[in-house]
Length: 536
Ligand SMILES: [Zn+2]
Image (cartoon, rainbow, N blue to C red; front, top):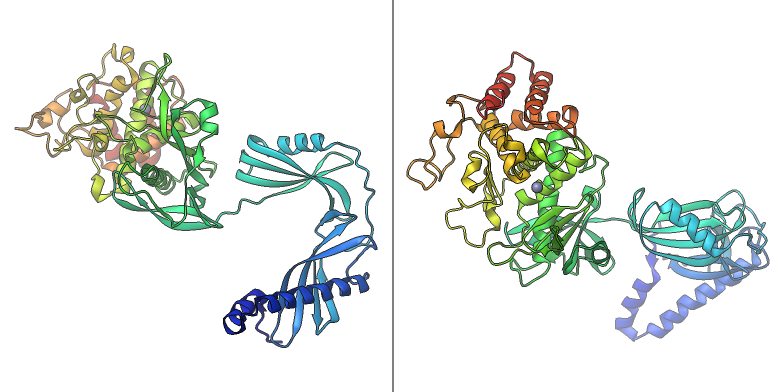
């Protein structure tokens, strides 16, 4: 049979333009549905129907030859029968057959032995995560199993550790109190949107297509999402009340701060590049290597201790990303290297766990600068040319592009960071003791090469000799690819919470030996680069 079915409502629309026959067509629909309901009553065996079952038509399809297909939901004494739905096929009002999965006419007792509250408790426990709402939808007949049973339906929404972003439909046995079944109504459809970003121009971002528009959720990267924290302090209550960015046309922002969604585009872009970097370069599936994306909060004031909240920061808060709006000196802190830096704190947390004080704290910060920079190279965006500066794009005024938060090739250019290891380096703030690690990595990847804009005659006036602590201008220089792989392996396989600079030398040498062998140029490069920052 080769029929071309069409949906009745489409034919109605066509008919409307000719005869204004909307009411007539609607009447047709109702008439067919009414006939099907009558047929259902006459065919209890074919429909596995109890005499107290009732049917409600929800859709009608009519083939060109007049065959009708009426989809119906079933209820039993007023309770929805989950899995009791049926399609009645008829021709000009004569029953042909029925499609259904229900396989019996038995119905359960309608006296529950547990309460709706108990059902909510069971569903909430199974949800296992941060619940935004939980609601009982009353009693149902759950008929998807071997035998229909009386159950409570419970809706739970939030962030589940098991299901990710979730809008869950639960069915809990009204006798035993056990969860019978659950599924996620949050079904993702990746859509390609455009972020009219603040710092990197117009960029492609992946969003989630829903009825009526788009959500800033990336189904292709573990459902990572971007929320608007509305300029509030980052208390957990405020973050809970942050709103997911949504949009009707999937073009986000206007390349300026006047549109709140602009920086959401920058954030989505930075998050996606960081995700892709770890996945494609290191085979790591998300920050926690579990395939799950994290939440990012835009427009947030970050708690920096002492009761102070500031817009002039960005942070990894242990489970999510936070981005402040900046101020007079800085743009919103949404640059790619900042995003990569902060999310790499999450990777450290999930791996080496480098304690955030002393030399291990400096290594933790250096790790974030190293991978933030490698993400910037990976993104390789023309409007944010990759370099070994940290945060250069967030300065509202940076005419030469040489102002930055940190300078990996010569950390002391920031006025506070250490270029070379000394026994007192561990007593510096972790953002300054990181200098030794940043400096090592630069020399390892690039060698003692002075970056453009910092050479003789510039205000930095650097030479190759000024880039090393021991006079060895031939140190390192094994290239970014090998350098980042060695560092990642050292971080994830050998470093532990209390690793200091001497132990980092050992860890990276082990990693280089694993990857390239002890007689390789890469292994020798690791040794010479550490020596060039006085870690021997
Ligand atoms: Zn940091």
